[in-house]
Image (cartoon, rainbow, N blue to C red; front, side, top):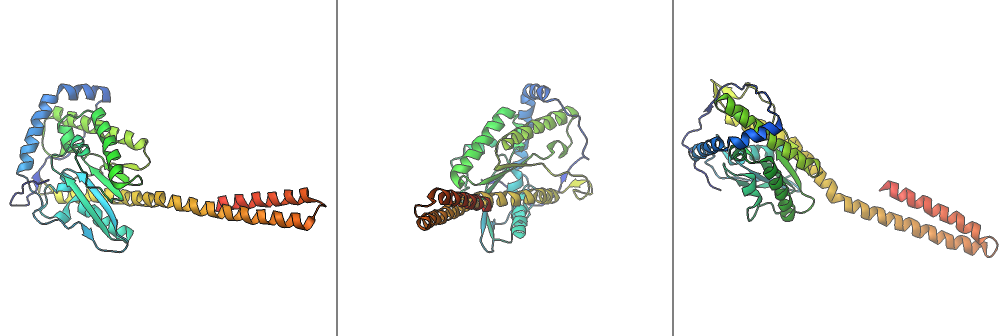
Amino acid sequence: MDHRTAPDDAPTPLVAPRRSRAVPAPLAALLVAAARPLFRVHLELYRREMASSIFPRDERTPLIAGPRPERLAFIGSVAVSGLGVLSHGMTTSSQTAARVADRRGRGLSWSELTSPVLTMHTAATMPSLTTEGADVVVVLLGIADVLAATSATSWEADLRLLVDRVREEAGPEVGVVVAELPPMAEFRPIPPVARRLITAQIARLDAASRRVAAGDDAVTVVPFPSWSLDGLYVQELFSWASMHRKWAEALAPRVVAALESVDDRRSAPRRRHRAASALAGAVAAELASVTGVVGEAGTGAPAAGRGRARRRAARAAAGALSAS
């Protein structure tokens, strides 16, 4: 998806982060619903801001050469589009990919489905997610959903749909890594009431993501990294380049872990096949020994010979299973 770029890479002015008191979830739902007209105003302002914001101006190069290449797919908004930086190599997705390739010691390619205003519902209902062949899919959505006052119920249902569609395109063993939302209320000076509403909405959507992951071993939720003024502000101006870097630093280890889990899921059938083959071989060998015992014993003590052989077969089968 296309987006406009501004001529300069200038940092965004910000106030220092403030701590907001948590709003109970039931109350937050009521407040967000009541404040939907206000959220719509913020969403429209956000759309206009994105239309004139800074985004990468170079060509994407979603490929890192190396042996036994793996593949990722990124589905996201500003972290993938690259808000605030002029090079695609500085985006969260590109920096995550580079760190994963380095940790795995393998080649890597990746796809990107992105727009600064992409929502979970829009992503989940796209004709194609461009995730074919992906080993792990990384989801970085939610900013537009916060401003659209998307309900936690709708977010959870759309995330489940997205995961199902990813599996249809990429295969049943694919891993899914979902990034929690950034502290949007700290990105610009806003009134305290709006700050608390946005923070409460973020908490609701993050909780819904964690519910999806709790019931699906292949889905991982990654909290947004803890952050402070250090390294994020230069002369009281916010550095988006630093934000992309910190986000990638938090995501990369979890993507590596997800790839390792995918390796385990894909190798499980081979391990079961080897175990079954070993078991069959052990049983066949012991059955052959039964025939030998009976033949040697003649009619004198066939029952005792068969009993000993069956016990040996059982022990051999147990050994083959434990070895698998």
